Amino acid sequence: MSELVTGEAVALELRAARLPSRALAVLIDLAAAIGVYVAVSVALFAAAGSLDTAAQAAISVATFLLVLVGGPIAVETLSHGRSLGKLACGLRVVRDDGGPIRFRHALVRGAMGVIEILGTAGVVACIASLVSARGRRLGDVFAGTLVVRERIPVAQSAFVPPPPPWLVGRFAELDLSGVPDGLWLAIRQYLTRMGQLDPQVGWSMASRLAADVAACTGTAAPHGVPPAAYLAAVVHERQARDARKAFGVVRAGAGAGAPATSTAYGAPVVMPPGAFVPPVGAPSYQPVQPVQQVQPAEQVQPSYRSPVNEPARPAQEDAPPRTGFAPPA
Image (tube, rainbow, N blue to C red; front, side):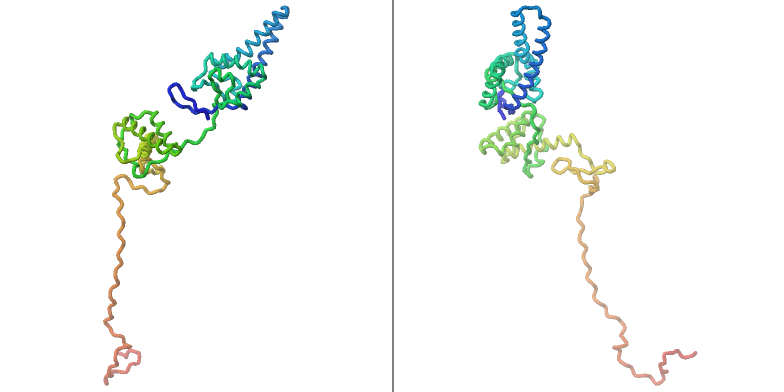
């Protein structure tokens, strides 16, 4: 990865092209240029066959300069640094500050390419590219250019650490409309890389960014809150607002079969189908009081006395004997 500094003092991280990809691009360009040179030479010699040897030699030199030297210069100038070979390999020629090249850059590169590529069969260009830290040949050094890779594998987006739980939702009333996009980008880059910075440097950067956010919002940062935590909370609040604008908040009963949502921490959270969500305006949930167990009543003694325990009474003389049958009327 090569770091370039633009005229506005902005550091750009570009992936410089190395020797294998550059050599493949040069071979493709040479094959195309030689093919055009042979076709043009055959056509000119067929048309000027009656001329003398000096005229034919002049035509040959002019064709060489026009096709093999002027052709690459014109192509790189018109395409802003993308020849046929570079287009196939995903490369581009840029200035040292990352801007597009102009005619003078392409002219110097083309003139030096005749010497270090065509004159020495690419030996000088290969040695210079291997020695250079950014893989530049002599033409790039004299022209102030660099060949970079445009096809870079897409990496996963950097993880922005969440704010502390006690700061979530604290800045819901903060006006973030005045914060520019460049400052948001700087804050995100700091939050994703603050673990790689020196503690003192990271603290100073966070303090400066927090002061810029406070100046844009018109509200000072809360006292006693670390600058990094304040920035994380502000970024979280902006993401929550963007999510509400993009997706909205679906209330219960909005539609049959629609998944219910919850707004925990200020952002809509999709809940699984069938989850219970109390309707709007429903009374708050009150826990059910446990049922008190009724103490069993004291066992009541029966009012009758069992015949087993009843004492025997003396039999009356006039009482009929007990036979188990009722007497006749």
